[in-house]
Image 1 (cartoon, helix red, strand yellow):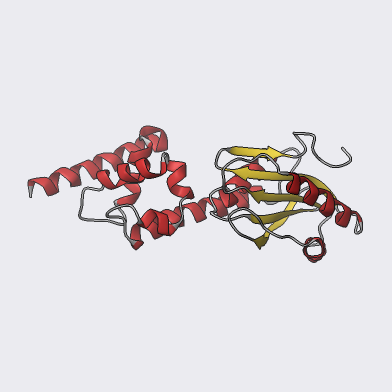
Image 2: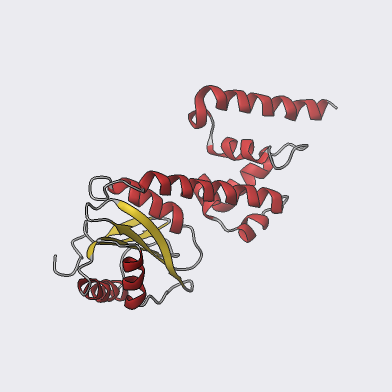
Length: 229
């Protein structure tokens, strides 16, 4: 009974600190610990939260892990792993809403934050297009192709078809590098050139190609890698 009271009192103190100061009032493992209290109601979850941080190195690493990897940590079951995955997906949808309607050139951080949240933690490569109107405001996005751990195949015709379907005037390409290194490969540069040539056939402006990874990102525009720039 005494042990039960100890962890119940600790949970109450965590919730109180969060309510008063938000995330700034808690350490990373404590944020994770507070989250796990809603999945594991009758145990001290601090050891579980710390085990997750040890395994994945950071709170971001935990959120980027897939459900199977999370469940490989001792005492973490499908309810907890689903809750962690749900948080990541909600964050992605929140950032998508914040991005839509914004002018992509004047709000590049909103686009980048969304792209990193959506793709950087995936264990395989994925290619996404962000569609823009004539004023460079974000209309929508689509993941057009998913591939293997180190490559994905994207067909220019597919990009053109989806841009026309969205009535887009501009587009931003995004893909991830599961290795974590966001530097573009020769294949990435060739793909960008090919897709830009296809875009020109329908007067579709290519604003950027972003590569995202756990260790950072690369913007073809910022790096002056856009063909013809």
